[in-house]
Length: 179
Image (cartoon, rainbow, N blue to C red; front, top):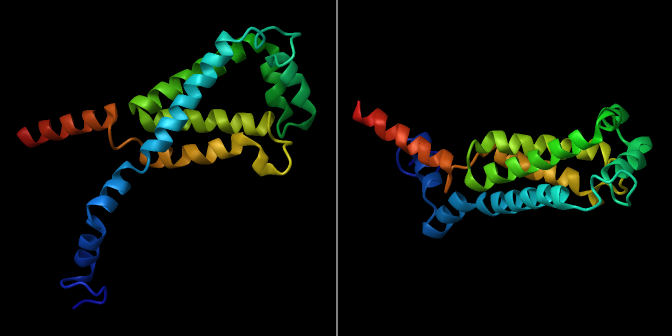
């Protein structure tokens, strides 16, 4: 008996115990990131489409417009220079954010370049947190910080299951075994 309490060598025994914890736990571990991927993917696609189809987002003087929002948060942003940069060409900035959200959402849902998509989502969330929701008090009422934290597991793990990335990895592994 080893120090891990499992027969065999300590390291191998620990790895065997870690590998299988029963069919339900194994499935839960494999599928654990899937709900997060679906939520973030759908949310970001929706957010991007909502901006593009909004009747007010690109209307500078309308309530809830991008320009109105940027001007409203400039004094409370952590990095006002980011607001100033966006205000130089707000429509281009708005379209970049909207299409970026759509690309991130689709990449996340499909698991296509999943880590890159998640990094894009994290960067969008970080920029929104440092500008739009920075002054939210208490901080946990602001959703952009929560989105930023939600993206991090996907940045680290990618989309190892039910994804284009996983299909590509399996195809590469089959090719390597043939040679």
